[in-house]
Every structure is written in C-alpha cells, then in structure tokens.
Length: 180
Image (cartoon, rainbow, N blue to C red):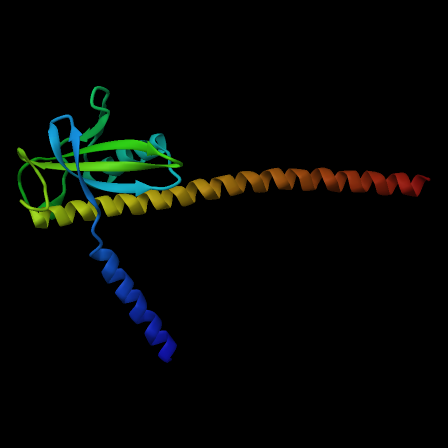
C-alpha cells in the first residue's frame, strides 16, 4: 500500500512539474522584425512532417488555418481562437520550422492585437503560449508513435510474407522427401 501511495505521489509531482515546465525563449528574426520566440525541439520528426502536423494542429485545436509564407519561410495562422489568452483581440501564430539533425525545431511567436507576447510584458499570456507549444509537443510525440507503429506493421507484414514462403518451401521439401 505504501508503494502505491508513493507511486501516485511521484506521478502527481511529475504532472505538476510538467504543467509548470518552461520552454526556452530566443530572440530571433522573423517576418515582422526581431522578437522573442518560444523554442521547441522535436526529435525524430523532420521539418516537413512537423510542418504538416503544425497546420493540422492549428486547424483542429484553434480553428486557425496556417498558411506558408515562402519569403519568410513561416507558417502564419491568423485569428486563432485561444481562450486562455483572455483577450478579445485577434491572435496570430507565427511559426518557423527548421531542420536540425534527425529532428526539427519550432520557433513560435504569438501576436495578440498589435503586440507580440514576451515574458517581460505579458507573463500570463506567455505561460499560455508555452502551454500551447507543449500541447503541440505532445501531438508531435503522438505522431512519432503513430509513424513507429506504421513502420512496425509494415515490417510485420513483410515478415509474415517471409513466413508464408518458408512454410510453402517446408511443405514442398517434405513432399520431396516422401517421394524419395
């Protein structure tokens, strides 16, 4: 009973720490100037996969369609419905997705009205923007698992085909032995 209580206490502590997790920020150039961006590293998903996931994420969760701007190489989602920001002003999400090694990095700027969110000016909104990006990180992890499962299922089908061939060879060899 003690171990069970300790386990649940550890899980609760982990969830609390995760809920308060802070993402690193970095001043980075974007289409509208140099602003503070939230940074999320996504291992094992390339930039193309991450970009596809980002567009579906903004559409599904925030009812905002992301459009790719070729000049700035940013995905811009206009008029996102993010209730946690607590404003009636339009919210635009600017995301820059870059390839890094086997994974990718997402830089996110959140524009509320005419101002970009920063830790110094809008700490509460910054926290909600961090939660938004953490939710995207969870979706990216789910996508990675889906891709891994699909790859494993493909390998399983290949192995089942090999097994079927081996069984037919075995039956043929047994018939050859009986005839001899």
